Image (cartoon, rainbow, N blue to C red; front, side, top):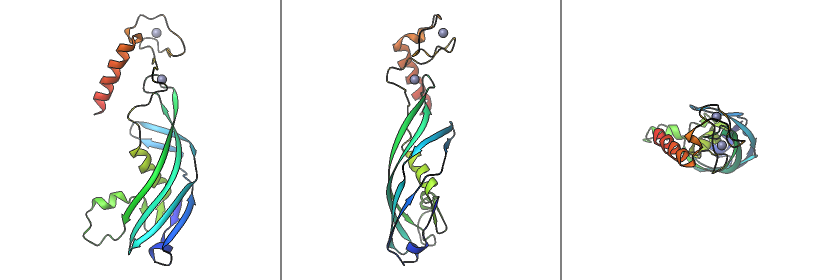
Length: 175
Ligand SMILES: [Zn+2]
Ligand SMILES: [Zn+2]
């Protein structure tokens, strides 16, 4: 969904408030696609500070389904987004280029709500997802979900100390 910023950029209005909706159905990351299950309405407040400088504030709740790192069961993860952005659309001043990246959710005179929220979700993306703290994971041999019952394989991964070590390795690789 796009919000027209021309009223506030032209100075006709100092502040506008808009109720928007996130329309993105999936969060696309290099690790895969994660379905968006629920989103609250997004209330945005857009204030012109001076010339083309805007302050954008608002809140939104988004629920995304992400698989458990150990057993791959889908887990509902709630993101409580607190948006607080300060952007300067005046590109011909001496502002450094990195400022442009920051405002990739603004296209001409429109604010792209999906892109704005997507950025915020990425910032808040958890390092680790577990369906429960003591998730037993899946058997390396037969693929049985060990939370649902044991299998007959002889596998040391049943030992909780082993899964701690596996997690350590995993975190290590991600760095
Ligand atoms: Zn799990
Ligand atoms: Zn097994």
